[in-house]
Image 1 (cartoon, rainbow, N blue to C red):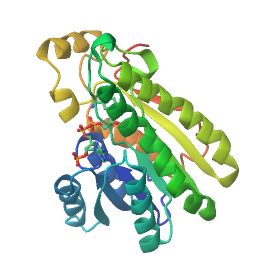
Image 2 (cartoon, rainbow, N blue to C red):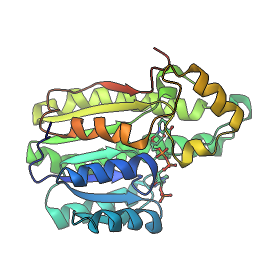
Image 3 (tube, rainbow, N blue to C red):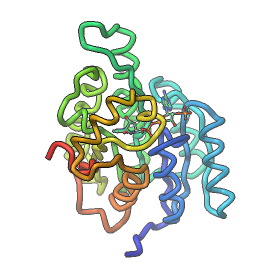
Length: 248
Ligand code: NAP
């Protein structure tokens, strides 16, 4: 199936590695101009170069999505350059795992601001342009931890569950402007984030995944690209789980 994209401009946060890189690549391959945003210019720059070297359109933008003033400046820059923003993928995320009683306030705040407040800032500063265009797609990358909870991830699961409620509210508030908002809840995906997990946890996780393997970043990018296309335009307010059947 060939998906339809009519000259769309996309902003993908956390596009320097893993899932965000795969999403940026697929959106560019589908014909979008992609702003690859991440914290370090080295990583988003490499991905933007990789996309450009394929003859596709991308640029890199380094910012800290947990800082509202940096998101505001980035949004102004993108809108000044392209005059539009059609697709917003809130994918940047971090973990700072610890058992609840040992978790520091810094660990809590870092995860909430990077994984949840960031999505408030991006929509706040991009939505007006999207609304003006009477067309938009917002994708928030949540997690199975936000759906089921996960011991050791009070901060992360709270942020990811928060994204789900936030997505549903955005879907209701923005539907009249032809803007959809959906969340994707990945299970275990092979990226730098999961390569840091202890071997015992990885083995235990594999046991409880019915498909008995971790997913690939492309598994998330595929559904994300569909949701962003014209064809995905009647889906809004949903949480799409991509997890190998875990926690059915
Ligand atoms: P990853 O490989 O660790 O990459 C994270 C990306 O986020 C990097 O590009 C990083 O930028 C960027 N980032 C982190 N903090 C940032 C900040 N403050 N400002 C701007 N960019 C920032 O992660 P991943 O595994 O691809 O995960 C992507 C998303 O999927 C995250 O939201 C994660 O929570 C979610 N998720 C992942 C899994 C999994 O199994 N991997 C499962 C469920 C949900 P730099 O490259 O510049 O450092």
